[in-house]
Image 1 (cartoon, one colour):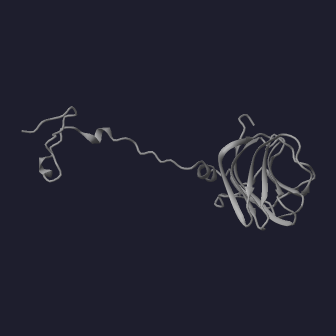
Image 2: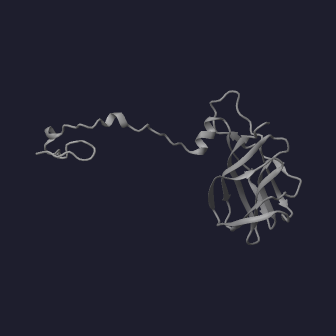
Image 3: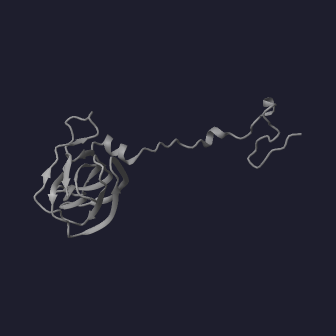
Length: 201
């Protein structure tokens, strides 16, 4: 004798006797909708608001260099830092300092090595955020040195930040590099980020 459980289907059904399955419960009525989750960076790329870029090769010789994302005044966007990489092309280790609420010592140069990640869109999206850099810089003395990274020789480090660093207009996200020993060092700093228009702008 078969017995029905709380949901109303025949519990006597089992794998080796498929003919015993005579459901009284209509599962199709209660199918859950399918949900597709995509990464934040892909979503922003599809919208044309995700960008990547890097500094040119930075040459350090017992001095400091930096690379930074600069959200200019009146950009009307907020900047979300998603990822950064630091590549050390030399044998001497580097110290990378990440600075928040700081202004880097001028003058600086603007990198031309910035692009949208969605090359299908026309016209091509252009980043309102600037990637700037400087070699032979004075030390950064204002703001907060939030954390440091050691970059061994001939190594690239990658930090996934998932957009948690939010930079308003007229602010910077800065990475400064200092060699740990005398001698010439070549390095580069790269960023992945997205922007979001400010409501009412």
